[in-house]
Image 1: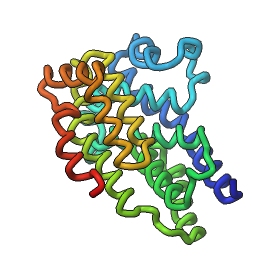
Image 2 (image 1 turned 90 degrees about the horizontal axis):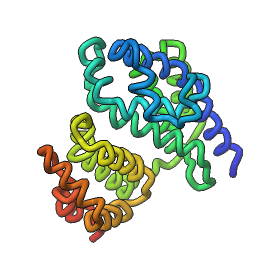
Image 3 (image 1 turned 45 degrees about the vertical axis):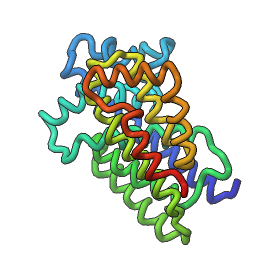
Amino acid sequence: MKKSEIAMYTKLYQYLLMLKDPLYVFISQILQHLSPDLWWEKYVVPYIEEKYNKDYKHLDFLDLINVLYHNWQPIKSYIKKNYSIPDCDRYIYVISDMHYIRNFVSHTRETNMSPYKYNKHLATIVDFAKFIHTGEGLVSTLEKEVQKSNQDYTFTVYNTESNVNREELIYFIEKNVLSKAVDKGDVLDPSIRESLIRTSIRIKNMKTTDEILSFFKGALKSPRGQKVRDELHAHGLKSFEDIYDEIAQKYTPK
């Protein structure tokens, strides 16, 4: 791995570490308002490993992202009532992206990093930092790094037509199925909700539209896929089956 790639991985990792404490403060303050006496047991413990569920100091950034993601519906409702955050609904995608970035940084592969990807992840981290109110100091540091990386790296934007199609496809799936299911997370079967969350994270790790379409084509035929479909339909939601023909027609290579 090149030194420049190692430096980019290292910086992203350092920025995630810097976000851990502000993220905990942001989450804990909201959850304590939602359930003053049982917030830890109700909102945190179910989504972290049992051996780490006694103390904040044992949690890492991924644990906190999982807590935020799994409790997004009540947290979002509180934010809308008490904070001035424009377009709050879109942050479910940012949270999902932060989960991807954490895994991307933790499972480094030599071919995964590029200046384009580094800048894209930095922009997401800046957006997330502002969302969780990290403070002007940290946001300023991150924004300066974005400016510096734009100056330091001369790079070809890897946003080719195939990558644009991949990102459009992910956005379409999230908008029409996943985000609407998350919004009704309290009424869905918990195991189905878990499947949808894993799907959201999984498709972001897929590199091509063909890989995403193949995944859904197989999932639709499986007993689990049919159970997910039935649960979503039971609550008036679209399933992957409902949008598959449309996305297959648009995104299958000609």
